[in-house]
Length: 231
Length: 133
Image 1: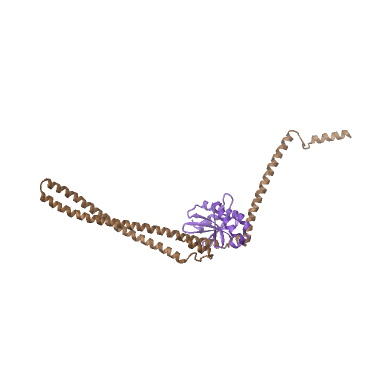
Image 2: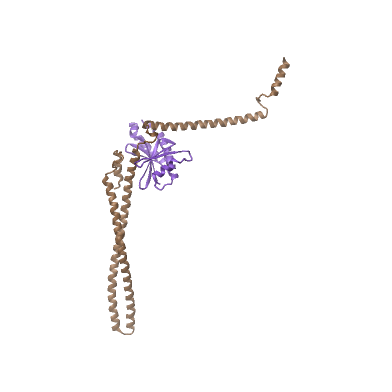
């Protein structure tokens, strides 16, 4: 069963002190021990494989050599028969029989050895699988340990030492302030765009001599002359 | 990168959005990082054999209105997948926001994760604020 069930129980149970066991400490020890045992077993298995490999190569060479000899003798026995030398052919046949028996024996030995090698390889693969699975389980436990440590670390460095209630409201005030600033900036931006549009229009009107043109010395003088003429 | 190296780099870094960091490594191996875009909620970074974990403790169960706890849990479950790069969880009585990165994550991506996580914290709090006491 996955260690996750144990972790869930421990975390829900409020084991919140840093260093407090997340799960039964034995579970961690057992997992770690299983990993070490599996690694040792793999080490020994690989050593055995190396030794067996040497024997396997030797046996294969001997079997091949025997088959080669058998083939040679077969050819010579046939030649002896062709030469009607049945007695000689018989001797060669006896030799062939010996060699065939030896080849059969060594082949059987080779076959057993191959089966052993395959068995060890299978065991190594299974142990590797166990190691990886246990490492993943251990990682889950250590992750939760670190999570607990990080969650319960009381800040001693930053503004977060203020009370929890104020932290949330201070953070949300910051959001509201940001939104307000953004809205102000948008409004200011729109105002600027509007102002620029109006300024632009005013300039065009002024250039065309339309509307309330600003006072100039000439227009003031004209006004004064008219006033004087009236009086 | 060790947590010490990470602290050193963070302390002299400014992001494109102008976020600065203050990082302090405690004796028990927790790297506490304050991001300028959310100073009220520092992020605690820890390492395991395979991961960097960035955790923001949010609030405790005690801070939730008693009759709103189920509603809060449901809301958090629904919004968690929509939050970029961060997930919501709980450790004992504390709700947390957290992100996990591979140990060989490059510095720029770590920075991005932290900046986003600080923003996400504010987003989450905004959503569930009505349920807090």
